[in-house]
Length: 181
Image 1 (cartoon, one colour):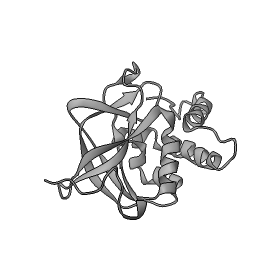
Image 2 (tube, rainbow, N blue to C red):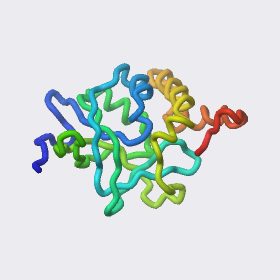
Image 3 (cartoon, helix red, strand yellow):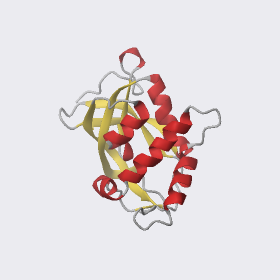
Image 4 (cartoon, rainbow, N blue to C red):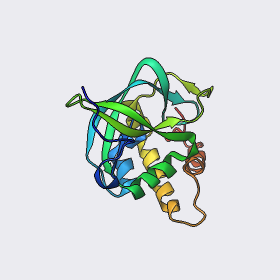
């Protein structure tokens, strides 16, 4: 199989393809961030593992031999949208170029994804589960994302990590809204 001739996740007209594997697989989260839900394809990223993070409800990926991460490729992401995704992923993640295989065609694409910045993070464990996240955490995460988007255009906007921590700190006292997985 040949790799599509798109370098660094770029398509025509500076449109990007981005592999997502966590909260960004939820249309509600993407719609809040980008004001639309881009076309997407189910994809597989070989050579990585998706971890749960102690004290967080979203996942991290890091390179791990003989592992793979299922997710989606968001297609046709514009430069301004990529800026929003970069801000949302904050400094906890590094945007990197990776190769994924599309499930429907086995086509391989060079795309962007967000890899956890701290490769020696002791808070990474197990395997993060999207379906479990949707049931337990998506409603609150959508609320946190809404707060992030509202802050994004302010001159003194908070980082996504700061928004996340302050949002979930407010939720800690409420047993019906578990803050952590």
